[in-house]
Length: 500
RNA sequence: UCCUCAGUAGCUCAACGGCAGAGCGACCGGCUGUUAACCGGUAGGUUGCAGGUUCGAAUCCUGCCUGGGGAGCCA
Image 1 (cartoon, rainbow, N blue to C red):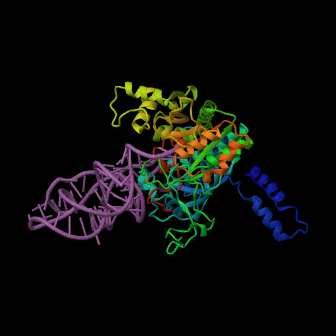
Image 2 (image 1 turned 120 degrees about the horizontal axis):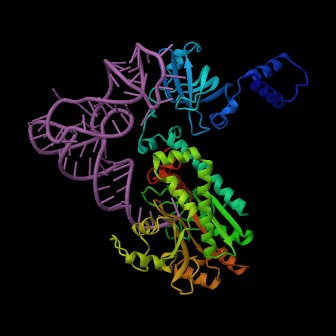
Image 3 (image 1 turned 135 degrees about the vertical axis):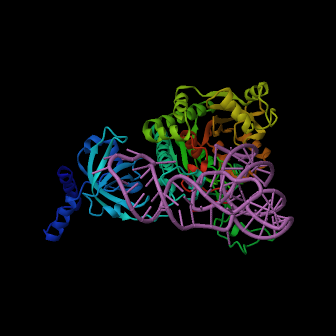
């Protein structure tokens, strides 16, 4: 305790600056702060247990569980800095407010000072013997999170409290780490992080239904002579919406920085009600110049493997929790993926595989229509049992900007399918030839005036380039085994649901 | 949007045409090392909403609402 407090004293002293005129009140203040117990986090205690052995520590956190007996009791304390909770032992003999502490309910916030002792015989490796427990914030008896299993559906209704459960503590710690890993991966490889606009007038891509952005009066918007809403009088002087993709902007920056990535929120107003769709989600969109579809797949494969590796290494407690309680066999499966090559097949080969299959499909398999979920699952789960790139789809079922192959019925598209989640990445080599691109824009009935700048990229030093979009939440689902996208977003926004 | 299943105590569920119940949680008490502690007791209900059938409806029928699973759309 003395060693610890001496340390704090010096630290505080330096932070305060050296007082020019010594005043008693300041001196007392500084000394009393220095005399306080060393404030630590659960994370520190779990990671450097030996360093704190037999030392006095002060913890602040929330009660996960409180069991009292006649003259002693146990608190499971969690402060959110680590997945683990710490056992606090308190005894009537040493605690003046024993009865108050014994009566504290789950969810209450306390400040605990006590000695860390190793408990090699017990289920937990160490515990803190409390000398003092002070109430920071009481929790009412109707606190909905109990020390027992709750359904995910119920926890979604208390999304403001669910991060205090084991599952969501692990999920959102993993989410944070995964976001960091994405930046690490690209930054290490010389990519420039691009903030693509959130508000855009570009609705030509057809990636999804749009959320309109306007500040016109919804009751009486200005009208044109035709009786339509006159968006020329709107804030931006034209129709605008929330972004459905930063890809087109990313292409412009790739043709300046060579390698860029976006990582930000994306909005789609699709009326889709599934476990893997949300109206607001995050997307990562790398774009690389002087690169073709194979470079694109190499990048995607490296990235997925990097992300898996990162979480397995840095989120050990969380990953083993997922493995035990969410998805048995998760760790083994992920380990296998790191060590295996992703399969790569063309759409045409995929169709052949499906046609040869003995499995009966609800939807017919024929060249020219898109692969159904059941087809994708068959390929990635039954044929390969690992991630599969499917490339070179028919032109008609893919987006206008994808590069037309020499055949010329197909385009250089690539989707990455993974077991359990389905499509996790969609990407392509982009059409860099101005005249071919203009033809595609015409074929898709898009007004080329809207894309004048996009076309100019082909006019001024346009080169072959490629990129893809990774759904951040889908990646997180894949890596944690959590099967509903609503459980990997802090406050999910889906059709008819925007609580919190 | 379509298909499908479900909605009963704070939570998880039982009762399936005849007295609305259990476990956990809450509250009160007991217990000298608990760890989703244990033991005893108490309270807690407009059975999602509206209508219908019936002597009688949580239970059967119709509509609506909400949620789960699947499909489409996609990341």
